[in-house]
Structure formats: C-alpha cells, structure tokens
Image 1 (spheres, rainbow, N blue to C red):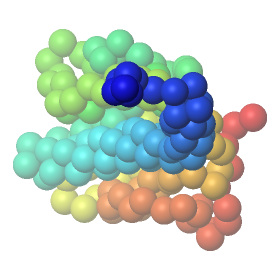
Image 2: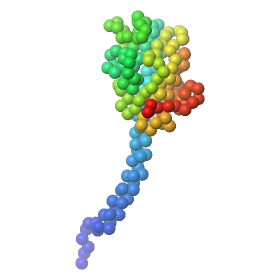
Image 3: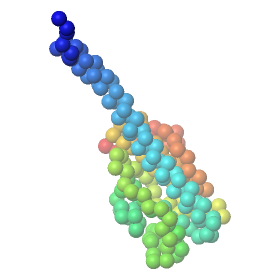
Image 4: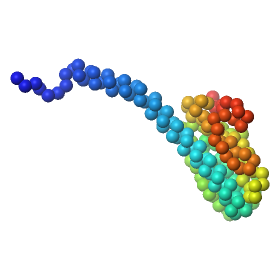
Length: 176
C-alpha cells in the first residue's frame, strides 16, 4: 500500500517549532538592522546639509543658515530638530534666521520619525571665507537610548564630525 502524501502531525509541529525559534532569534537582529539604517540615513542627511551650507556660503559669498523647520518653508524657532530642518541662503543676515521672499531654499528635510534630535543650538549659520561659523552638537537618539545614539559635532570652521561621545568625551544622553 502506498503512503499518502502530506505531513504528519509530528512533522508539522516540528516545522512550526523550528520556524518559531528562528523568528525569535531573527526579529531582534532585524529590528536593530532597521534602526541602524534609519539612524545612519538621518545623520548622513544632516552632515550632507552642513557640507551643502558651507560650500554654498563660499560659492555665493553669503551666509547660509541651517535651522529647524516643520514645514520645509520657514524656520521654526520653537520645537525640536527632529521635526525636520531647512537650509537656505540668508541674504539679509537676519538673526534668528528667517526665510524671506528673495532667499533661496537649498534643502528641506522631513521629520526623524523613528527618533529624536536634541541640540545645544537653535540654528547654524555658515559664513564665507572661513569666518567663524556657529558651532554646536546635535544628538540623534532612537528607542535604544544613549548606547545607540550618534552626535554630529560642528566645529567653529563648520566642519562636522560624527561621534558616539560628546565633544568633551562624555557619554551621550537621550531624552527621557
């Protein structure tokens, strides 16, 4: 007599147990991979926009502002950086920076949906000819806390660097 094709109950239970074990092991690793990719993308966008602002200031011989923005059209002088940011040529040099009709918007970045950004500056201004720019630090955090946080530290010359500690070599902190 020929055996029927299909799975026995024991084979089915064994297969389900193996799938459950593999899923339990793989999901945390995959979640970490996704969070790392999001963090890296956000930090890289910010560093890119710093370079864009600095190069444009040199090229156009005018100050370029990088400020927090929730709508991509105007600086937000309250709120936080994780709502997004804006890079524009600040022709009339307003302080705090404000986008006027004759200012050119160079880049607008959306909110950091999977994390927060805390900063010790409300905006950055990049000036031509290596004249002192705004320095400061932005810390990018996600649900993993300070151990996975990254800081973008901007020097007085406008040079950014990415770090896992503060400028004073202290551990990064994330909000609550």
